[in-house]
Amino acid sequence: MNGEGRLTLPELYMIRTLLGSISDARLSQRIAETEQAGALTRDFPRVRAQIESGAASGTVWVPYGAEPWLVTMTPPTPPFPGLVLVVSSLKATPPGVKLLSRTAEGDALGESFPGLRVEWSDNRFLETTNRSVPVAIWVAGLAMVLGIAVFCGYLILRDVNRDVHMTEVRSQFVASVSHELKTPLTSIRMFAETLSMGRANDRAKSEYLEIIVNESERLARLVDNVLDFSKLEQGKKIYRLRPTRLDEVAGSAVRAMQFPLAQQGFQLHVSVDQEMPELQADPDAIQQAILNLLTNAMKYSGDAREIDLRLGARNGDAVIEVADRGLGMAPEEQKHVFEKFYRAPSHESRLIAGTGLGLTLVAHIAKAHGGRVEVESEPGVGSTFSILIPIRAAQAANGVHA
Ligand code: ADP
Image (cartoon, rainbow, N blue to C red; front, top):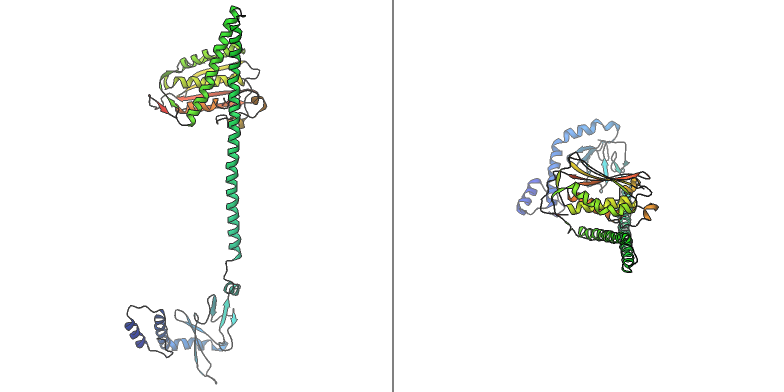
């Protein structure tokens, strides 16, 4: 096999049989070449005719076979009359270079191969001498690494910002809860001390007692809100649903707010649709939601002194509406009012004490009943909050975790 001499096709077949299953690429190639040489010998009259037909316009190279081979014949004149030249297009050229036969393009291969030309790509020498990664790939890789680094930086920064924001919000929350706790406690203490000194007459006494009771209730509501919010955060808030009449629940809420409303000179207009059906609800939770809405209506009323509480039914939902004619809110603020700790940044709202939890709880209570809260508001005109609860909500009557 390694010898220089030519082997005939039968000899080559014999070697392959002797080698058996050992595959040898060189042997296969030699067999293919010998077979192609035999075929060319047989086909030569046709190939020769092709060569001679174009001989007038110079040397013609005829492609032959699969590789292909380029075949030509020297003219019938000395020094080498009628010499057949065969060039393997694959073997004669390194990778990336194409051997052409009959074309005007490409560069002449040399005097020994008249009429044979080569063609190579412009960056062929660059590619073969410099096998390193192209600059474009380096640049793209670098850009990608930089992009990933910047993106990771952004994520870290965002997390840090969020943490900082949350810390600020929480400390602000602690400050506002402390403030809200202190206010009723101060008045409870002040009126209790006045009473204990025995200086007040009977009329004043009953008024002070009423204030003490009312402030205690306000305190209890605030504590309830904070405790409920913490249960809600931990996913431990439980709603106990039972057949409930919303007008009765709203009545209790109105009674609880009567004193503070009257004290601050508010007029509450209550309207109840006669058709109010009974529904599956947690009456304590619904009352808490109504109280939160009424408290907000009072807090954010500005100079206005009228509040409406409307109960009714609309499109299969029971609707509880609390409307004020006060400060109102910009559309941007309305989008966030149900988020925890959110307080509208407008100056007037900022001056009013609050924790940013009231509406979060209202929204949660509505959702736990299969419903939702809606807000309509216009700055300087007022706000209307509506709790909508499906009348035939498919809820279990014994309890809902939310
Ligand atoms: P807060 O304790 O601050 O009142 P809420 O969750 O009840 O918390 O309300 C969130 C924010 O929504 C309030 O800070 C206020 O800016 C705005 N808001 C709530 N109710 C009203 C209303 N009736 N009119 C105008 N703004 C309101």
